[in-house]
Image 1 (cartoon, rainbow over the protein chains, first blue to last red):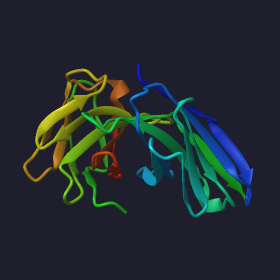
Image 2 (image 1 turned 45 degrees about the vertical axis):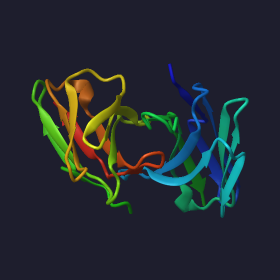
Image 3 (image 1 turned 90 degrees about the vertical axis):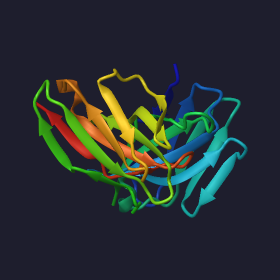
Image 4 (image 1 turned 180 degrees about the vertical axis):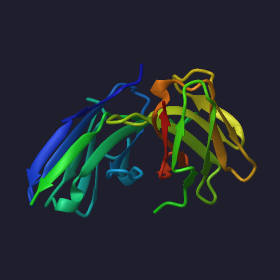
Length: 113
Length: 109
């Protein structure tokens, strides 16, 4: 069935370093890939997304890359700050019919001051 | 913050009971999706409503049912509650880009 694998499950970095989170999806029909940040006890918040017709997208310190052939996409956070500490989820969706998200299992990012 | 709201915030029920959770979608969004998020896991798709009709369902039993109203608000109903139903229930409005509500934390004892 449809599946999204996400690695690593936990990630600790020093403040100012970069963090990379990787996801692999199984459904070749997936064409939309959002990333969400979820702080403890709060709602998932969209931080960046990418569509399958684009290989890379950047928004200030956050970037996402997509390799459709390998069915991989990654989140890159540069110059990490303590407020970046949260759980990050990737998701894959097919933008036709049912727009359901298949989520990864999450990455707990800790930025150490 | 998004315009998606959910009620109640927290709920405690006992096994076998029934529960109704509510979601008010962001203005202008006619599509609402419901997700179940167990502790430490990613959200799992339950179902989606588009203009008051179910538009897809995940791998959840029929005791999970829903409704969408003409104002695009939505309800999630769960019958015959089981202990494993304890989770955070999230609704999201929007189509390809979905905006999540704050969730309802359901505890089944």
